[in-house]
Amino acid sequence: MPQLQATPEIDFQSETYQDAYSRIDGIVIEGEQEAHDNYIQLTALLPDYKDELVRLSKMEARHKKGFEACGRNLKVVPDMVFANRFFADLHGNFQKAAAENKIATCLVIQALIIECFAIAAYNIYIPVADDFARKITEGVVKDEYSHLNFGEVWLQAHFEEVKAEVEAANRENLPIVWRMLNEVETDAHVLGMDKDALVEDFMIQYGEALANIGFSTRDIMRMSVYGLTGA
Amino acid sequence: MFGLIGHLTSLEHAQSVAKELGYPEYADQGLEFWCMAPPQIVDSITVTSITGQTIYGKYVESCFLPEMLASQRIKAATRKILNAMAHAQKNGINITALGGFSSIIFENFNLQKITQIRNLTLDLQRFTTGNTHTAYIICRQVEQAAAQLGIELSKATVAICGATGDIGSAVCRWLDVHTEVAELLLVARNQERLGELQAELGRGKILGLETALPMADIVVWVASMPKGVEIDPDALKHPCLMIDGGYPKNLATQIQHPEVHILNGGIVEHCLDIDWRIMQIVNMSIPSRQLFACFAESMLLEFEQWYTNFSWGRNQITVENMEKIGQVSVKHGFSPLLLPSG
Image 1 (tube, rainbow over the protein chains, first blue to last red):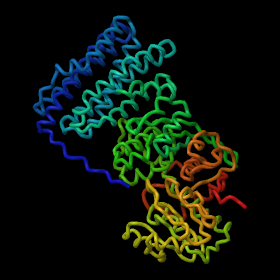
Image 2: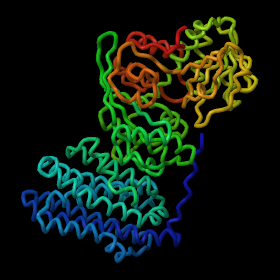
Image 3: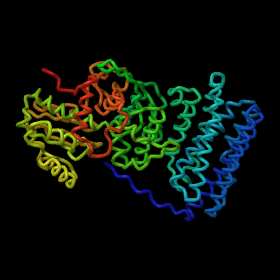
Image 4: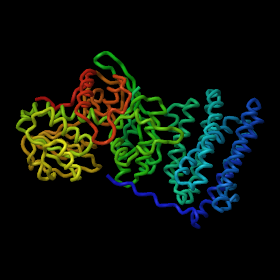
């Protein structure tokens, strides 16, 4: 039986680590900003849920501040230009869906895909984070489950009418996620996060969300790997 | 509800099963993909006991493949097992058996240290290795198949290959206490553990594999290794009963000799058909009735509502617990797989 190799010690102060961290931290900050803006924008589409959505958006703003502090703690300036470009396609798709009043598509992008990805990334990051960032991230991850839940509950309640739209949104946006992941694979690896672990955690989270909404195991297996090969 | 955590035997096998079950997205994928794939519940199971009691279970495919160990993808391998366990627990399964390499990986890589899986705390009471029942069934196979071949245990030498393992040591204890076996040959790699086992039993010869095999009337093979070893059937005693209780089972394909009788070890037959698809996939000869004894252990624990990790840790299987699980095994209609008659 092969043996588990010890994980090498991470030097949080090394140039390589800090360089990679500038992009990853940038993405996380931008992701939280996007999430904040998206939940605010959703209040126009879902006025009945305004209070809940505003509460979620405030949570995201708080997370953003937390991750900015993580960067300052390591004396790293987050690369926001990179981060902005990184989210451009998902941002564009959300804006397009919002303009067309496609609530289900907006929820798939923000409340399922982005949240599941955030949860997966944070869960994989926690064991390899510096002490300061670990505490912040542990707090954030607890909150993120409640965002996921908001999208799940709405989509579940409207499952029959939105099923086809959810599938279409999945087809359109999941390949973007795989491409985004490939873009930061090397940086994530420097931080001690492996791509296969990230993808697996994402698929577990996303699969559970799809199951809660009402999709069958067969649907989930098909949907959650959409576009993964060739990515 | 009971659960079974299983996996397929190779990448090629996984690809063909995915194709057969109608998952084209999984069918054409390489090892890299399986390293990323999440666990799935792919079968629902209904089992009826001869007492008339009916229980329900689920089969969790962990997406682990033995190639992950062979290619040093250890992190992926351990992740598969922990994620499958978390999946079983999240789905409300009361007692789940860790089949195939699952329990070996759990034990070998000390996974009991990791109990927090995302937002879930693993409750290890809900899992069993199933090794107590496996060890019991292998012992019954030794006793009954020896009788089939006319080998008298009181005159027989039995070699246990993998004697210091969880199942191997339990088999040694049972054979010592419950049978008249003339001689026990203890074969394993770790000399220190062999010495401890010999001291515990107060008997048994410690020998190397090459020395032990030609002396044995019965060989119990309970070593688990991704690759098999070469065994020359001409160098064995004739007749020789070989019980292949290792994982994966590969003795029958490499040893073909009219006087060497290979029996798949740790396999039980149920007296009634079980409603499931999964045993077809793992190539059992009678898929509706035959299954791994470790899986049957979770069924027995469910029948009896013994919601506890009946088999856990290393070398803690007692003869008393083997008797206890053996009694309920018989009660619910399971029997050890034997040699074909005639």
